[in-house]
Length: 250
Image (cartoon, rainbow, N blue to C red; front, side):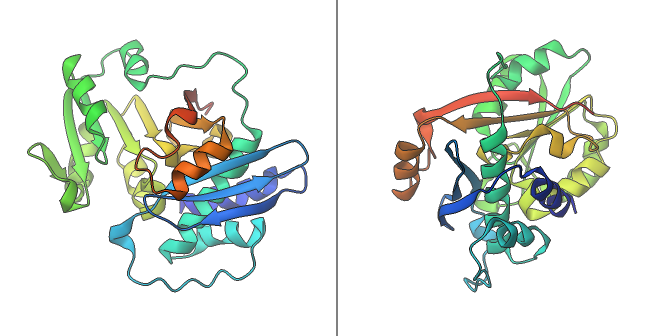
């Protein structure tokens, strides 16, 4: 599975002694904070409430290595903490010194012959923008609570994704394992992007996958963002973020 693969690659990225100084499996976002010689960084991952069947957690060794090993687990708590750790390490090393795009809609505007767009996960503001620029949008969702009148069950992704010109998926697909199916059925898509706070990983972790962009955000004020998360803000770290869209060099 891709999550297991990027977990192992992240471990190989470590260039110094980084330590976990804070973490929480929480709603709406799980987070992990790490610290190295130069700075702190925070990684988040959306908490998939519908996937939680037990609060049992076998994580007893609080270290980067043990948290990263959770990428191999089928326990959603361990997997979520693992992805948040992958994201925290990625954010420690990620470089946004150069100007980067911040709008996935503009990215699609630069791509030719993109008419049919699949949006996987409930990202209604993006759906509205896509419709405004004339795209035919197909919205797929697993959680029935998040359905609206245009939402399609994710069970139809197998049939419909090969017909899409672009696929925009929430980073949560890394957690629930559907990213593997999505990429398997995305052969005809010119753009395949992972979006949102959960997609904070380094682009090079996906260099051999059919993913073209990671569109997420870097937390620039960790202390205030962390307080937001601890208070359960559904806006995550909100105004303390810098949004970006990074192209993956395949």
